[in-house]
Image (cartoon, rainbow, N blue to C red):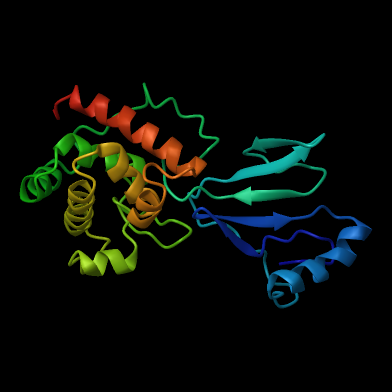
Length: 239
Protein backbone atom coordinates (compact mmCIF):
# COMPACT_ATOMS: atom_id res chain seq x y z
CA UNK A 1 0.00 0.00 0.00
CA UNK A 2 1.72 3.18 -1.12
CA UNK A 3 0.09 6.55 -0.83
CA UNK A 4 2.90 8.94 -1.47
CA UNK A 5 2.21 8.68 -5.04
CA UNK A 6 -0.71 6.98 -4.92
CA UNK A 7 -0.90 3.35 -5.99
CA UNK A 8 -3.14 1.84 -3.37
CA UNK A 9 -3.94 -1.87 -3.83
CA UNK A 10 -6.09 -1.91 -0.72
CA UNK A 11 -8.47 -2.01 1.07
CA UNK A 12 -10.55 -5.10 0.38
CA UNK A 13 -14.25 -4.53 0.12
CA UNK A 14 -16.88 -7.21 -0.33
CA UNK A 15 -19.78 -7.17 -2.75
CA UNK A 16 -21.66 -10.39 -3.53
CA UNK A 17 -18.59 -12.44 -2.78
CA UNK A 18 -16.24 -10.46 -5.04
CA UNK A 19 -13.44 -8.59 -3.27
CA UNK A 20 -12.07 -5.56 -5.04
CA UNK A 21 -9.24 -3.13 -4.49
CA UNK A 22 -9.37 0.65 -4.76
CA UNK A 23 -6.65 2.38 -6.75
CA UNK A 24 -6.00 6.05 -7.46
CA UNK A 25 -3.62 7.63 -9.97
CA UNK A 26 -0.52 9.58 -8.98
CA UNK A 27 -1.89 13.09 -8.40
CA UNK A 28 -1.58 15.76 -5.73
CA UNK A 29 -5.25 15.35 -4.86
CA UNK A 30 -4.86 11.61 -4.43
CA UNK A 31 -1.97 12.15 -2.04
CA UNK A 32 -4.33 14.16 0.14
CA UNK A 33 -7.36 11.92 -0.25
CA UNK A 34 -5.54 8.62 0.11
CA UNK A 35 -4.94 8.68 3.88
CA UNK A 36 -8.47 9.99 4.48
CA UNK A 37 -10.03 7.20 2.41
CA UNK A 38 -7.86 4.63 4.10
CA UNK A 39 -8.98 5.85 7.50
CA UNK A 40 -12.63 5.88 6.49
CA UNK A 41 -12.42 2.35 5.11
CA UNK A 42 -10.49 0.92 8.02
CA UNK A 43 -7.36 0.06 6.03
CA UNK A 44 -3.84 -0.07 7.44
CA UNK A 45 -0.78 1.34 5.72
CA UNK A 46 2.12 -0.96 4.95
CA UNK A 47 5.56 -0.28 6.34
CA UNK A 48 7.63 2.20 4.28
CA UNK A 49 9.18 0.47 1.31
CA UNK A 50 6.82 -2.51 1.48
CA UNK A 51 5.67 -3.91 -1.85
CA UNK A 52 2.02 -3.31 -2.78
CA UNK A 53 -0.33 -6.21 -2.14
CA UNK A 54 -0.85 -8.24 -5.29
CA UNK A 55 -3.40 -10.90 -6.28
CA UNK A 56 -2.18 -14.46 -5.89
CA UNK A 57 -0.39 -15.90 -8.93
CA UNK A 58 -2.86 -17.13 -11.50
CA UNK A 59 -5.70 -14.97 -10.15
CA UNK A 60 -7.68 -13.30 -12.93
CA UNK A 61 -7.23 -9.51 -12.88
CA UNK A 62 -10.03 -7.32 -14.19
CA UNK A 63 -9.77 -3.52 -13.98
CA UNK A 64 -12.96 -1.46 -13.80
CA UNK A 65 -12.89 2.27 -14.48
CA UNK A 66 -15.28 5.02 -15.54
CA UNK A 67 -15.03 6.73 -18.93
CA UNK A 68 -17.49 9.58 -19.32
CA UNK A 69 -19.54 8.05 -16.52
CA UNK A 70 -19.72 4.68 -18.30
CA UNK A 71 -18.12 1.63 -16.60
CA UNK A 72 -15.24 0.12 -18.57
CA UNK A 73 -13.53 -3.23 -17.99
CA UNK A 74 -10.07 -4.33 -19.07
CA UNK A 75 -7.32 -6.77 -18.15
CA UNK A 76 -4.85 -3.85 -18.35
CA UNK A 77 -4.81 -1.13 -15.64
CA UNK A 78 -5.93 2.31 -16.90
CA UNK A 79 -3.20 4.96 -17.17
CA UNK A 80 -5.52 7.76 -16.05
CA UNK A 81 -8.32 8.10 -13.55
CA UNK A 82 -9.35 5.98 -10.56
CA UNK A 83 -10.11 2.30 -11.04
CA UNK A 84 -10.88 -0.84 -9.07
CA UNK A 85 -9.25 -4.21 -9.42
CA UNK A 86 -11.83 -6.97 -9.46
CA UNK A 87 -11.02 -10.58 -8.70
CA UNK A 88 -13.48 -13.25 -9.76
CA UNK A 89 -14.30 -15.69 -6.97
CA UNK A 90 -14.23 -18.73 -9.25
CA UNK A 91 -13.13 -19.77 -12.75
CA UNK A 92 -16.57 -19.23 -14.32
CA UNK A 93 -17.56 -16.25 -12.16
CA UNK A 94 -15.89 -13.39 -14.02
CA UNK A 95 -18.40 -10.94 -15.44
CA UNK A 96 -15.93 -9.94 -18.14
CA UNK A 97 -14.67 -13.40 -19.11
CA UNK A 98 -13.72 -13.68 -22.78
CA UNK A 99 -14.05 -17.48 -22.72
CA UNK A 100 -16.58 -18.89 -25.17
CA UNK A 101 -18.16 -21.51 -22.92
CA UNK A 102 -19.80 -23.20 -25.91
CA UNK A 103 -16.46 -24.17 -27.46
CA UNK A 104 -13.84 -23.98 -24.71
CA UNK A 105 -11.86 -27.16 -24.14
CA UNK A 106 -13.59 -29.83 -22.06
CA UNK A 107 -11.70 -31.91 -19.49
CA UNK A 108 -12.88 -35.39 -20.37
CA UNK A 109 -10.06 -37.54 -19.01
CA UNK A 110 -8.98 -35.78 -15.82
CA UNK A 111 -9.84 -37.38 -12.45
CA UNK A 112 -12.18 -39.90 -14.05
CA UNK A 113 -11.97 -42.47 -11.25
CA UNK A 114 -12.42 -39.86 -8.53
CA UNK A 115 -15.41 -38.26 -10.27
CA UNK A 116 -17.12 -41.56 -11.01
CA UNK A 117 -16.62 -42.83 -7.46
CA UNK A 118 -18.01 -39.66 -5.89
CA UNK A 119 -20.89 -39.45 -8.37
CA UNK A 120 -21.84 -43.05 -7.63
CA UNK A 121 -21.55 -42.64 -3.87
CA UNK A 122 -23.70 -39.50 -3.70
CA UNK A 123 -26.02 -40.21 -6.65
CA UNK A 124 -25.00 -37.18 -8.71
CA UNK A 125 -24.53 -37.30 -12.49
CA UNK A 126 -20.81 -37.50 -13.36
CA UNK A 127 -21.33 -34.88 -16.08
CA UNK A 128 -22.64 -32.42 -13.47
CA UNK A 129 -19.67 -33.06 -11.19
CA UNK A 130 -17.32 -32.47 -14.11
CA UNK A 131 -19.17 -29.29 -15.10
CA UNK A 132 -18.96 -27.97 -11.53
CA UNK A 133 -15.23 -28.67 -11.29
CA UNK A 134 -14.72 -26.91 -14.63
CA UNK A 135 -16.75 -23.90 -13.47
CA UNK A 136 -15.19 -23.72 -10.03
CA UNK A 137 -11.50 -24.19 -10.73
CA UNK A 138 -10.92 -24.95 -14.40
CA UNK A 139 -9.63 -28.34 -13.18
CA UNK A 140 -6.81 -26.69 -11.24
CA UNK A 141 -6.27 -28.65 -7.99
CA UNK A 142 -4.23 -25.77 -6.56
CA UNK A 143 -6.90 -23.12 -7.19
CA UNK A 144 -7.57 -20.74 -4.32
CA UNK A 145 -10.22 -18.03 -4.39
CA UNK A 146 -9.82 -14.57 -2.82
CA UNK A 147 -12.23 -15.74 -0.09
CA UNK A 148 -10.18 -18.84 0.69
CA UNK A 149 -12.08 -21.55 -1.20
CA UNK A 150 -9.69 -24.34 -2.12
CA UNK A 151 -9.06 -26.99 -4.71
CA UNK A 152 -10.93 -28.49 -7.62
CA UNK A 153 -14.41 -27.86 -6.22
CA UNK A 154 -13.43 -24.70 -4.32
CA UNK A 155 -14.43 -25.80 -0.85
CA UNK A 156 -14.46 -23.25 1.94
CA UNK A 157 -12.68 -24.61 5.04
CA UNK A 158 -15.90 -24.85 7.08
CA UNK A 159 -17.70 -26.66 4.26
CA UNK A 160 -14.76 -29.02 3.83
CA UNK A 161 -14.91 -29.89 7.53
CA UNK A 162 -18.67 -30.46 7.38
CA UNK A 163 -18.19 -32.78 4.40
CA UNK A 164 -15.48 -34.79 6.15
CA UNK A 165 -12.62 -33.50 4.00
CA UNK A 166 -9.31 -33.61 5.84
CA UNK A 167 -7.09 -32.27 3.06
CA UNK A 168 -8.64 -30.12 0.33
CA UNK A 169 -5.42 -30.35 -1.68
CA UNK A 170 -6.04 -34.02 -2.40
CA UNK A 171 -8.24 -34.34 -5.52
CA UNK A 172 -10.10 -37.43 -4.32
CA UNK A 173 -11.07 -35.82 -1.02
CA UNK A 174 -11.92 -32.48 -2.61
CA UNK A 175 -14.12 -34.06 -5.28
CA UNK A 176 -15.81 -36.30 -2.73
CA UNK A 177 -16.54 -33.39 -0.39
CA UNK A 178 -17.72 -31.10 -3.17
CA UNK A 179 -19.96 -33.77 -4.66
CA UNK A 180 -21.42 -34.58 -1.25
CA UNK A 181 -22.19 -30.88 -0.73
CA UNK A 182 -23.69 -30.61 -4.23
CA UNK A 183 -25.85 -33.68 -3.58
CA UNK A 184 -27.22 -31.99 -0.47
CA UNK A 185 -28.07 -28.87 -2.44
CA UNK A 186 -29.81 -30.91 -5.12
CA UNK A 187 -31.87 -32.59 -2.41
CA UNK A 188 -32.78 -29.21 -0.85
CA UNK A 189 -33.93 -27.80 -4.18
CA UNK A 190 -35.73 -30.88 -5.45
CA UNK A 191 -33.20 -31.76 -8.12
CA UNK A 192 -33.22 -28.32 -9.76
CA UNK A 193 -29.70 -28.00 -11.17
CA UNK A 194 -29.97 -24.23 -11.69
CA UNK A 195 -30.94 -23.61 -8.06
CA UNK A 196 -28.33 -26.07 -6.76
CA UNK A 197 -25.63 -24.34 -8.81
CA UNK A 198 -26.81 -20.93 -7.59
CA UNK A 199 -26.67 -22.20 -4.01
CA UNK A 200 -23.16 -23.58 -4.57
CA UNK A 201 -22.09 -20.10 -5.64
CA UNK A 202 -24.13 -17.76 -3.44
CA UNK A 203 -25.22 -20.06 -0.63
CA UNK A 204 -28.54 -21.87 -0.08
CA UNK A 205 -29.84 -19.11 2.21
CA UNK A 206 -29.60 -16.60 -0.64
CA UNK A 207 -31.52 -18.91 -2.97
CA UNK A 208 -34.26 -19.38 -0.39
CA UNK A 209 -34.36 -15.66 0.44
CA UNK A 210 -34.95 -14.74 -3.20
CA UNK A 211 -37.08 -17.79 -3.95
CA UNK A 212 -34.87 -18.55 -6.94
CA UNK A 213 -31.53 -17.57 -8.43
CA UNK A 214 -30.33 -14.52 -6.48
CA UNK A 215 -30.08 -11.24 -8.43
CA UNK A 216 -26.30 -11.20 -8.20
CA UNK A 217 -24.63 -10.76 -11.57
CA UNK A 218 -21.84 -13.18 -10.69
CA UNK A 219 -24.28 -15.89 -9.63
CA UNK A 220 -26.43 -15.49 -12.73
CA UNK A 221 -23.53 -15.78 -15.17
CA UNK A 222 -22.12 -18.67 -13.13
CA UNK A 223 -25.37 -20.65 -13.39
CA UNK A 224 -25.57 -19.98 -17.13
CA UNK A 225 -22.04 -21.25 -17.65
CA UNK A 226 -22.54 -24.33 -15.48
CA UNK A 227 -25.58 -25.26 -17.57
CA UNK A 228 -23.66 -24.78 -20.82
CA UNK A 229 -20.82 -26.95 -19.53
CA UNK A 230 -23.24 -29.58 -18.22
CA UNK A 231 -24.96 -29.87 -21.58
CA UNK A 232 -21.60 -30.25 -23.30
CA UNK A 233 -20.29 -32.84 -20.84
CA UNK A 234 -23.53 -34.80 -21.12
CA UNK A 235 -22.88 -35.10 -24.85
CA UNK A 236 -19.36 -36.47 -24.36
CA UNK A 237 -17.80 -39.57 -22.91
CA UNK A 238 -14.38 -39.65 -21.22
CA UNK A 239 -11.71 -41.13 -23.46
